Image (cartoon, rainbow, N blue to C red):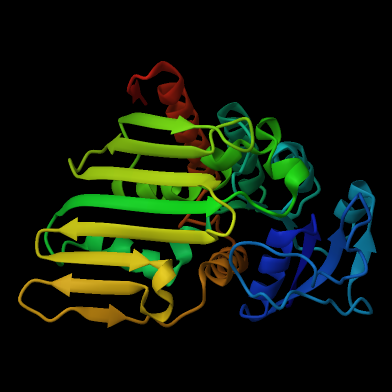
Length: 344
């Protein structure tokens, strides 16, 4: 059976997820919904962002149902999975409504605007899972081949224990969706919308940190738009992350990491293009790794689809993970405000 996706919200991330569906067999776009009416003609070619296919999306609307009314959209019996890519502040109510309607939910990060909302949604996801209805936060970094390589090196022990890990995700302010992204009360600023990727990945590799110490500042959203954090983890490794929307226009976007292990170093920098990932192993020549496989957007959708077909809740990333990542970001905000470490 083909699983039909219904897209709620038709901006950059909706276009990115629709593009990813082409790499996930047995799925299709069945319906789209946008209360504003924008892009309901299926033409998303004007939608842009910081990553993904620049060619955009143009749907064949003879095969896709369009809605402005969310209730009518959620009542569509042919939709199996609702993909929520609306502004962050709307996630909690829309996700709960979709779960109550009996549809599986993929919700874009951050899963919710606050940690308290995250706990509410995680509770709702557990209740729905008991009915065979599943929710997954779209934390795509866990599924990106280059980050899977880092995860495997950190937890696998092939190169000895990890000594340190540094993650960096910096950009100029987003030029799309200004009304949402550049209002911190709605989006959470760079701390919650951008930096949360690395927060979640650090949890994925090292477990939930016991303490965080952060410095940061605002620039464009009224919230924290540049953050540098250190995390205390059970492994004892020196772990840090930097996230920013504060770069000068023209800078673009860059994501990077460096993982130092006892017998190897992995270094990734998206600005190097096709030579982004390099591995340095003790006693061997340096090498550039070019990994096969779908990107993180397709990878996360594939995992969710596989989980649904198996009748099991997703395991690589869970609603509890989505809530916990928001809670760590809130602890970072508190640390910036007080100038003190925050125990988690």
